[in-house]
Length: 141
Length: 455
Picture 1 (cartoon, rainbow over the protein chains, first blue to last red):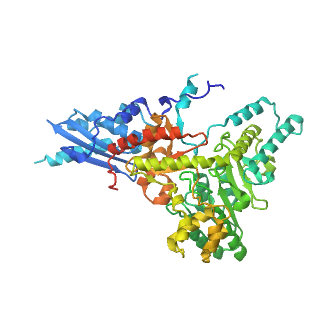
Picture 2 (cartoon, rainbow over the protein chains, first blue to last red):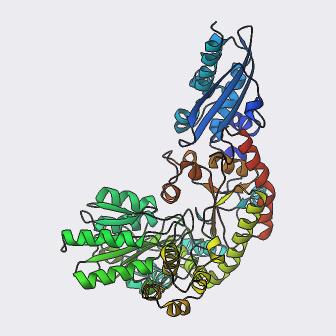
Picture 3 (cartoon, rainbow over the protein chains, first blue to last red):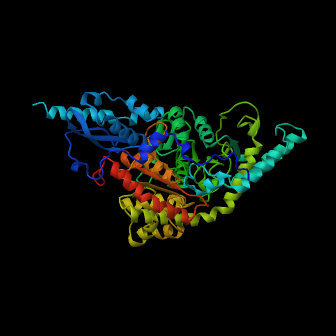
């Protein structure tokens, strides 16, 4: 049997980059268990299960900086990886800087995403934006 | 070499997507490749050798669906076969089930005037009453126009078997009473090779089936056309395929298809064992992941119409509907199902041997709060290959239209995973899957914004 033209089954056959795969397999900063128990200063929720993607982002703020960030995501590999990436990007930044994180920045951090995934699954920054607004509205007075 | 070792470790549970080439098919393909064949349309010897190989292939392939060879043409794939039938009825009213393959659905939407979609219940079985009412309305409007009804024999995502024989009976009745020309097409791509399929028993005008779901090569399929039924070629040109499909005949792939068809016929009975594996997987998943929703209507086997009929002296409402749908799923059961209508349960009982409502080799399960593409990819990292009805995994980012038609619930569609088996699937592979799956689902559910049981 000639084996040389059988494509080997390796992770290289994936539609996603190795960085995406790593974040998908080992998501950073996600909230284990009940998210209600994860005390936060602000939170944001975007997307919905009907579309197939939903992200919850919660932040703890110290000295105007994101001291801690936690999240949950319902969605595909790229949705999970992009929220994980966002959490890494946002951690330690000032609120102003964190609010500037764009879908493109997340995508670049992950080494790129398939074109059709970019628009639907990269929503984490919007959830973060909401979380920051939520924090700011609570701390106006 | 490395690949043989690695391939062995892969647990392939996506046979409904495509099947690996059977060893006998590979052998045949290599044998044909060694022959220096001419064009089967050429009159010289090299051409005529090709022609006789092509005829042989046609005859074997036709036998698989109990058709005569001259009623079967080769096409490039199931999609072409389906498109060819639909395009023949361009500008006519076309009725299709809501769960057809896109290669029926899209051309029907584009060329039907109008295209009517037949809704399905949660088992995925079409609403025959709806079809009857809508057909009658269409006939009253214009009894002279041709009508096409296209209902798949078995669904590719759930494995649900449709009551095609009963649809054929309905069409015959309507034709008799109204003299309107109504034709029936069935896409039997998933059913052929898994359950007995006969164009005579189904009484259909057109039937689609393909090679690569049977362990044959991709790139060749067949279309059965009942003699006398309307036909317009989709690909025009030369006189190949009895002037029904132009293009140089593909002797190589047709020969591969031939061997796949022979093997399918030989191995049909072995699918009973596959059904046992499927039932085992379903039972164990339910045990390990109680929130899992079994989409494929296998449960109905246990509480099949037998019991229903035995227990109830009169069949009414939903029970009757269920019994009737299931009856239609077996060959030549349509008549007996009609007898139930007259209250004659005994006949119905006798006509049935065992309720068959789904294919033996497909199990579709939806995991709440666990998006299907994630499940699929985590399983892939464990070298287990499955498919999903999630929007994320599809090219068009829409959740499975099949599951949407059955449940009208996007979350069920997004969470669905299809396990499809072949004759080579082993109990050990299923056990491996059963060991790997629960922690994966638990992890995805923990990551999820959706709480189990909340939605």
